[in-house]
Image (cartoon, rainbow, N blue to C red):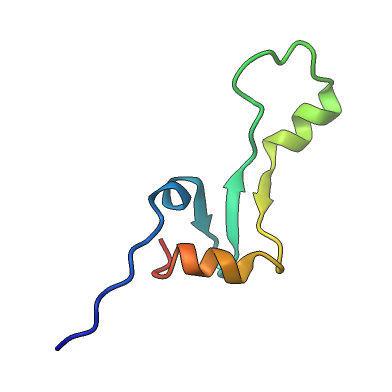
Length: 68
């Protein structure tokens, strides 16, 4: 009997993506509205891509077993 395939977590699948080097990246939150009250430095940092830390990579690999 063949082994069952693992299911990817559908919420994580929509929010995270793999980079070319195999890291998990995500878009930062807080850029959709009410930007008037946020200063320029904060908006510049929100523009950049966020990366999952090494401590969370094991958990994320369980959520996304097949590289998205």
